[in-house]
Amino acid sequence: MTDTPYDIIIIGGGPAGLGAALYASRDRYRTLILEKMIPGGQIFNTNRIENYPGIPRIDGPSLVDQMQKQVESFGTEIKTGSEVTDIKRTDDGRLEVFCGQDRYVARAVVLAPGSSYRKLGVPGEEEFRNAGAGVSYCGTCDGPFFRDKEVVSVGGGNTAIEETLHLAKYASKVTIVHRRNEFRADKILVEELLAKANEPGGKIVIRYDSVVTAIQGAGRVQSARLKNVKTGQEEDYPCDGVFIFVGMVPNTEFLKGIVELTGQGFIRCDSAHLRTSVPGIFVAGDCRVGATMQLITAVADGVNTAMMIKQYFRDPQWWKQASVEAGQAFGW
Image (cartoon, rainbow, N blue to C red; front, side, top):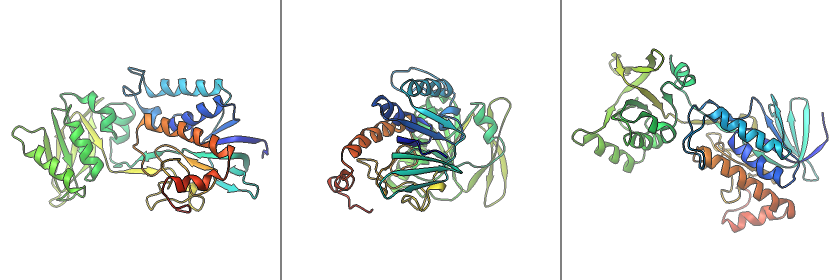
């Protein structure tokens, strides 16, 4: 156990956490990152990043390495293998963060545990994702790498349709696979998708009542095995990549009963100030309500929390005042 006080404890060492740490430590706040695995989050598994301003192209591990070295150069401490199990607010307003038997104390906490892509759980999914060989969960990120290629997208919600339309800007053919016979996305998006699919020589093909049961290939994705859920018929469908858009799972299980969460587990917050339902606890990145699930916006969230924490330290009563100014009732 340790009672050594920190100014700020950041839970999660992904882009949001590192962004918060950079600004906090440069302001000479004693800053600690608690990361249950290794720094980087999802971005660590990304082979090519071309949408981070100022860096034409870099791989995830290299970017994470640069970010980690940068925050450490300003004094941020990073403890890996530290899984947070509880957070408590003391009578004097400090926050106790527990990692099993280890106890840390801070004036403010930033929640940045991130989220995970919901997976299909089919053979080949992990194999081709880890190799960077054709499985992706982000059309906005990876669509340009499939220019003039044929891809399959999976899902039926807003994100799936939006990303399928985006993929059609690059791929020569996009086949969207949906397990039902109608989409659950907003009507205006469905209408746009159907219009594109009905265009002569259109790039978009719709496969209703179907699921992907396997992703196949040798070194790279070469086909997806499709099964019709009504007839049971299966086929190997040639493609160069599979994009999976079946939702996100926030890494917030440990926060139940600590801060207010949505039914899906995302952290409720005041989007103007990134405050949670507990004074002194802020949130950043993919785990919060309204997140856009992009690298640059996660970093920006982290920066914003560091700026808001400065205001909170100057005047703890600002916490309630801020919610009124944002037009939201305190207490959620």
